[in-house]
Image (cartoon, rainbow over all chains, first blue to last red; front, side, top):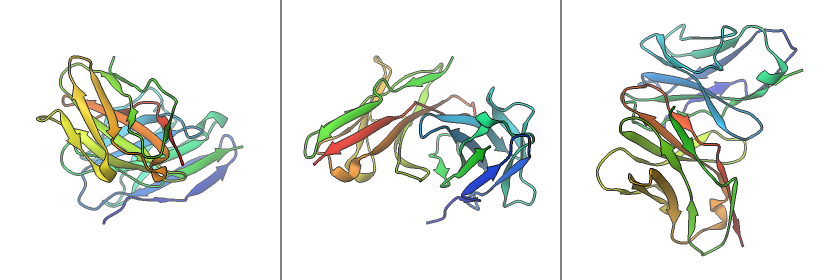
Length: 114
Length: 113
């Protein structure tokens, strides 16, 4: 079964540094998402992306965050200047052609900001 | 504001007993409701969904959920729990044409041998 893959599995960075989290969604999917989960708790919506542009974003997704689909296969989340509170698990997800379809999640990238 | 609530942080059930994990929602328009399960160090896995039609939906691993419009609930159920069902369970909702799916805070299910 096709999978959403995320790299790296664990990223450690210093406060103030830029990080890029990478995701390869399922190939025929059209909607892409980033979520984050802090300390194994609530899964928080960050952003959704469709047709090469952001379709929805949360209040968490401020100017420090950006997303890109540079080459038709990768879907990246960039944090320009990381803060300690950005430490979390970041999950990429994708769905096919309908917004009421289930999300397919990757296994996540654990970001640790020191 | 749109929201989804899981009132229990943790549910403990003896193996073989029925289990229920509660979820309520608040959305404008028709809700699309989902349950996901998360095992340690893994992403969320889809269990089942309600879009329209029959209020009782069946999903993976013997789970089912009942949509109750008057109570705005979508509780997850299983007639006989297994130890392997122990995991973190998330209820999620989307609505209308908004391209946004929000999750409850999760309920940790412990099945006791």
